[in-house]
Length: 432
Image 1 (cartoon, helix red, strand yellow):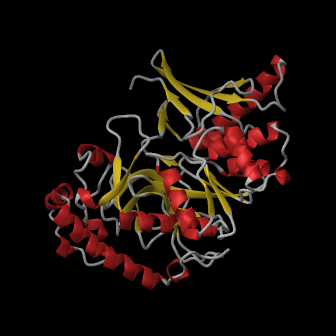
Image 2 (cartoon, rainbow, N blue to C red):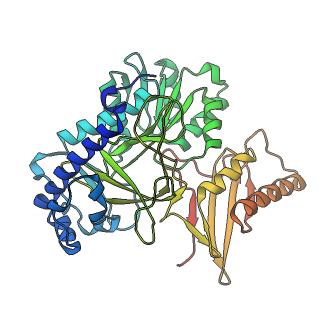
Image 3 (cartoon, rainbow, N blue to C red):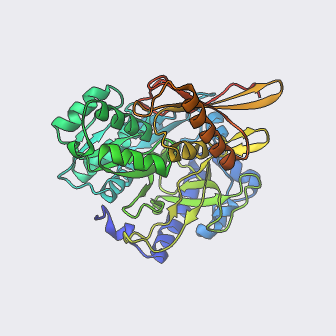
C-alpha cells in the first residue's frame, strides 16, 4: 500500500510536533481575532494568544462542546466572512438544533486530502472504481469520500445511500473495487448479494471504507466474508470536517489521526483533566487549520485511547483505538454503564450478524433491557425449545459481559426495519 502524501504521513515525530505547534499558535490567534464567542471563553479562563507558544500549552485553552455549537447556531462560531464560505454540512442529530459546519474552498481542499489519504491506505489508485454509498447532501459521508476519490483520481460512482438492488447492479456492471458506506449498510448489501445467489468470489470489490457508526471486529469479519473484501474503518465528525479525521491502514490496529490537521487529546470525561497517553477517556480534538469553522479543544464524547508506536505501514501518525462508545450514548441501566458495542460483540460472537435493536424501558421503577435479534434464514427455526435455548445462551453471554441480566428475543428474518444510513440500534423508552 502506498501513501497519498508520504512527506507528511511518514514525517518524524519532531516534524509533526513542529507543524502542530506552528499551526496551533496561528489558529488560536485566528479564533481570538475572528470568533467573539470563543474569545469570550478564553477571556473567562484568563488566557490570551500570547500564552500559547506550542502544543504543550494546549491544555490552557477552554473546551468547546456540542452545547456551545447549538448556542452559537448558526453563525456564532464562524471564523471567516460568510462570502468566503462555499459549503455547509449538518449533523444527523435528532435533538435540539442541528449542528452546522461551514467550509471555505481551502477547508474543502484539506478535507478531501484527508479522505484521499484514507482511500490510498485502503489500496486505492487511479485504476480503481470507488462506489460511494454514503448519503450525500447535508451528511458529510458522501461529500467527503467523493472529494477524496477525485483527489486520488479514481473513477467515482456517486451512488448515495439506498436503492440496494441498483447499488448491486452498479458494483457488478462497473466492476467497483472500493465501497464506501456505513458498516450496517455494508452488512445489508452482503445479505442482499447472498439472497441473489452471489458468493464473495463473484463480487468485484477488494476493499471497503466503513464509518459513521460503531461496529465491532466480529461485524468486520462478517462483512469481509460476505462481500469478499478487506474492511477498513474511518473516523470523523461533522464538527471537524467529516470522515477522514483518522483512518485505518493495512495493519488495522487503530486509526491513524491526520495529525498535521487535528491534534488529539484524551481527557477524563468527569474532571476534564488530560490523561496520560494510553489511558482510556474522552477524545478531544483541535482542528489547527480550519478557516470557516475552527474547532479548538472540541469534546467529541467518544471514549477511546491513543496508541503510539511503530506501524508496519510506515506511517508515523499516532493512532486512536476504535471508540468503545460515547459518553453521551452510554446507557446507565440499573446503575451499570452499558455500551451498545458490548452487546453487539456478544451477539456476533454467537453468530448473529443480522439486524438487532436494544430496547430499554422502566417498569415498576426498575430498568429493563430487551435485546431483539433477527435470526438469519439459515438459522431460523420455529422449534420453541430450540429458540429458548439459544436465547438463554445469548442472555448468559450478555450477563457475563455487562454484569446485568437482559431479556433476549430472537425474531424471524427481516422483522426489524433495515437502515440505509445510520442504523437505529438503541430505543430508550425511559422517561429520565
